[in-house]
Image (cartoon, rainbow, N blue to C red):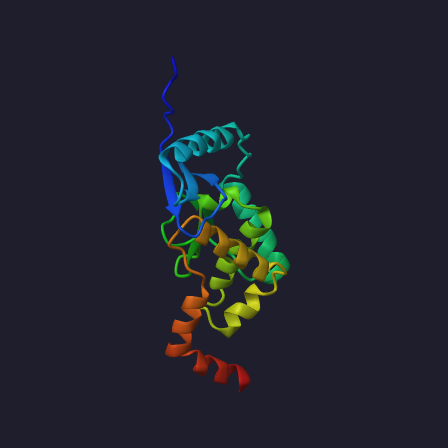
Length: 195
């Protein structure tokens, strides 16, 4: 007798996907990405293979909130001269439209648990990004000068954009925010920097 899989499975078909099949864990469920042209039999075959692969992979040891706070302090010291000092840094359940968030008013930083599956250098970029918000709240030129002190900024942004696109996540790059900022006042910020 076969025991039914208790893990919720979501299958996403994509017309852009031609041959590749991938899968990843998203919270309690497993998401399987397949080409739209697959037959029902091919879908069943690949879903079974990919779920077995994801469930068989050894879970990584995930750092807790205390380790995350220590890492934020190290990154602040290394890239922001120790000036970004959050009141708290913690993991939160997967966010719908962001990888992380920062509330400068109460100096709190929250990172989506989705990031726990990503390389440490990507997590570090997100932490530096959120730490920089403690010093500059918007996404203007001064903010990006701070963030770009982290040497893997562009690579990490590309990685996150790729993950978002592959998984059809509604998470946009901060460049969209840059355009809005440009329309609402970064010209004044630039003038102040020049003066």
